[in-house]
Image (cartoon, rainbow, N blue to C red; front, side, top):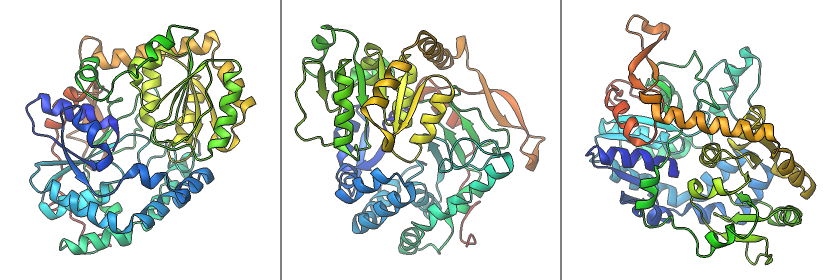
Length: 448
């Protein structure tokens, strides 16, 4: 589960909809702190990803090996969690999945004859000629970009047995759910900023780049979990703006490597270390360092000078909104791509974690603090805020051309908001969509 789904849930609730957020047990306190109804599923993502084997694979950086390992070791808990999702979705009118749960949730939608949409929080696996599949990188020739999406088949092969077993248990035939999803014409919400991603012209008309989903200050203030750590406010006032370092829900795979780099940074800068899911153990005490487990990015990042992050899209969005430069120290998945995009836009620098040294990190922090980079970050933050406000009205997005048929031609339709400040506008957007029914119209019984 990503915190980026919370604004959507809160927006739907504000509109009078009954919303249930389904996630593993370790998210309970966070979700319920926002007053959102919660249904737990089996498994503990934080413990699973902190196992020695998982950390070793994180260090290697091979996303296919890492996710294959997670599927393999989840074993019995995955069977339980799939059926927990089945029970949680039974009485829902709409199902909204993320990329990791999509094969199972799509099957549930087919079984219960439900409407379904998917929210992608980073570069989506929707084939296009404009950029390659994220496991390949961000640059490529147009003819090879679209071809690269065939790697999706390799990803799905790792989980197909598990998905087919689940489908059989609920009375559905074996199927290539990946291909069924791609052919289903379901609503696909790509919750990424237009500052980073321009919508490809060859995407289907049901795929929409909405901008980041984020919580308003009022929503942040009303919840009970995300409070400022004791002593942090005072510490921030006692010196220059610190360097923020945080890897969120991706544990640091080589902690001694990061601690060496941290020592190098502390020789020149104050540091705010947000541990997240990383279990550092006993860290050295330093007068220039403040350590917390979690932090409110919207409040904290504007009080920092640079953000050193893993490059997950939620943290990237928070840094962009704060108007400060980023040093992306990527581990795997979409993080290297996000880091390269940030660097290509002149909004920061990218260092693969395997190449992290004290010298490289200190150099990168200094390099992104130039007036030119700081100004680009300020402009990017302002552009994001203007899109969120709609500049007095919503900017138009892509709708379906009724004359376009299968040619997938697009036109500008003012009825659809293109950027969303929070879940309110996305709720209106969803209400205007006809979501396909995979069970009736796009079933996957013949998708072998």
